[in-house]
Length: 321
Image (cartoon, one colour):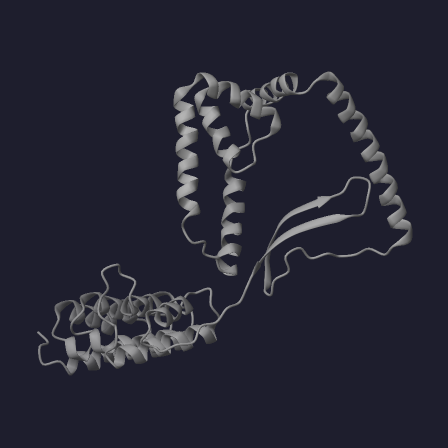
């Protein structure tokens, strides 16, 4: 056994998942390899330090999401090659030869045959006498998100279905709390229903109009940024209108907000949103980029209503050249 394989087996050994056929091979390797023995001692010392720390129970949502991500990661793992399978089978054969006498092997075979015969007999009897029973393992409240595995017992109608659930939760608190604000920003996501999105954007707009926590964030994920995302990409007209309302006070001071409003003037599919965006630009009509966009829309846009609104905005500006 090479050191890399031995270290993989050390991890399995500490978690009690090392197959019996590899235990003897690992033990012989550790006798002659000081580096792997030190690796084993370091791993055990790490486990002892972890045991002194308090254990926190993860939330059901975190467990469900972790299971789904694990299933996706496992699906992405390529199948073992021929050489890898040959090596695994070789180590298993060595383990059997070194740790299992011939009598034990014979008894194991006899026990397997007897157990298989008994199991088939019990399955046949249960099919004839009892109705089928559905058993839920670790039942939880929630919606089934996906099925992760289906296993049928050979020569029977017994089926085990493994699946994940998303457990609903709720949080109640003040709009000033970061947790509530973060949930509201998640509620503006396109995956949410239109009713949830409009409620979330409305509350975030009220926070900005009141001057609460709407300054630009260093990571670009604050309330102001989320309102610009909703203005640019949300499919619901009411949500985009509400996002414009929340961004109104920042048009004169934030170039990013101004650019988002100009994009709405040029490209938003709804005429009411475009008209409202033109109105928001009134305090900054002296800006050259704003005048350029208004001139382009006033002369080239296919919607006469928007052309007129842009032309009137240009006429009302004292800085038109």
